[in-house]
Image 1 (cartoon, rainbow, N blue to C red):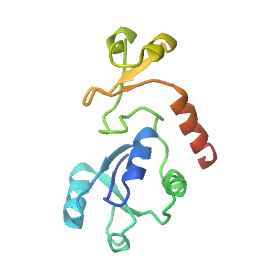
Image 2 (image 1 turned 30 degrees about the horizontal axis):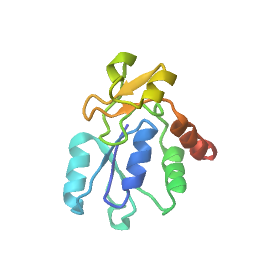
Image 3 (image 1 turned 180 degrees about the vertical axis):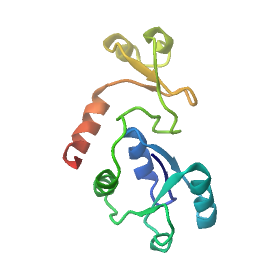
Image 4 (image 1 turned 180 degrees about the horizontal axis):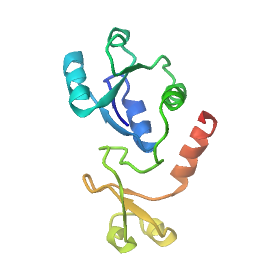
Length: 143
């Protein structure tokens, strides 16, 4: 399942990626280009724009609160694999040998973690650190 968040939902787009959903963030305010991109790529549009609601393939996000927005999506669409996509560019992460990221992460992180993931597009490195625990705590009551 693939999504595209309109310009009003940048924060939701990032959280969707962290939850493993293939989600683009469309910064352009042109609704026609948004719809065309969604149709061409088979994506569901996530928006707060009530005028788009009548179009097919559009899911209207009602809340302004990020937790509530995530709940709205999770309630209507099955979850993906958490922490499997790059939060910056939406690319699927790859598990890499520890040595490959030696010069890309803080020394302490390299010493204390065994498993690392790398975004092959933007080279951002991920690991299951305290930030993951904080995100899981944030998401705990979402379901």
